[in-house]
Image: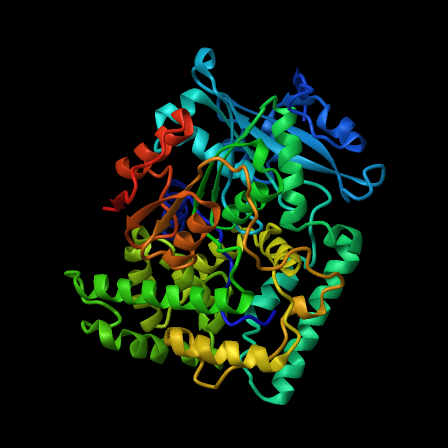
Length: 530
């Protein structure tokens, strides 16, 4: 699929990232809970059966697709269920969908406030995996774990929820990654667009147009309100990261009267156009690359990009551009090409804790070994060691195509990609922009949302967290979202994607106080990452 850069905004929790980076180197139902009370239920009588359902809680092992996931999902304190929702809310008597839900029970049930729903981003990220990691991790504030049932759900079409978005098999995913789509000639553009059309046709045949039409955030927030009510919560308490902030702001607009507290970290600005967001995100990754180059030059070990950060982009391009024509060996019979090399470096730039492994990967690249960068790219694409992919990136595309603007003018694509080359030179092929239309231009259904200023009359105070050096969701988007929602901003100085619930005392102290006691952070609060 043609894309000037991986545009995923998925947040990888730092605890999980540490384990993954280390790896680079080396339905039975047992209990039930009552459904929503009348006060917590939705107002549409046609949806009464959904709002009034009971969840049957049991083992989470039913959701595991690997031995590692089974170990995660069978940790103490976790239970799981399936939530039934309409596939199409305009036709509540029609086909239904099942939403996978995971709960980590509050450790202090006597003083339990309610449920804290969480989403890690994407779109396409698994909320049940995220909730399991937060619930069993060591960095989530004790006060949050004590006072809330931590609840994650896989949004419709994602992960363990059904029907699931499906477009490519594992072999096709490998082939797609190996095809760099860097040829800007008319023939190259035509070939890329033909591939994108085949991808869309795969989504249609494997998933169905009726599902693709109803996987957008517009529908996800309706599911979340059903879940809120079924959990017995009069008001929603929610923490969303990256794309999860879009879920939060969309919920705030659809159900402002049902909000208790929202923490939105790593913001997507709902007013921003798709083209502007793409350009800003690329600029953010160039900033992260420059920060890495500065760090690298300051280390005792010689930096593989040289000791002058101003020349690091040139050095990187001298290493990576040859991969367009001559991919490098990367172990296990695989090779590293241009696309995977750029994806691998992007994965590591999400958080400065990954800088050491990235430096090793680039040093190996200079020596003719692409193994580390390929494995970093595998993390991004969620490919396991056996070669199996989750549906995360397919879901990313499908959801984006109904959430974002569908650009069908090649002149606009050309202008966008020229600006991307300007703001993110470390990603430039040197061949000029490829103005091929992406899969969304051929999508079988129209978007269900457009950029706009949210209307949130009656919304209580919310909290937005924004990191100054965030590569994927630049700082200014957080400033703009806080203003749009009339919320309070926490500014965080650092170089990583998102900052909440990750062990920083300043950020987590303020977030925890807000979630538990509804105490707003001090005006102008500024925290710093170590």
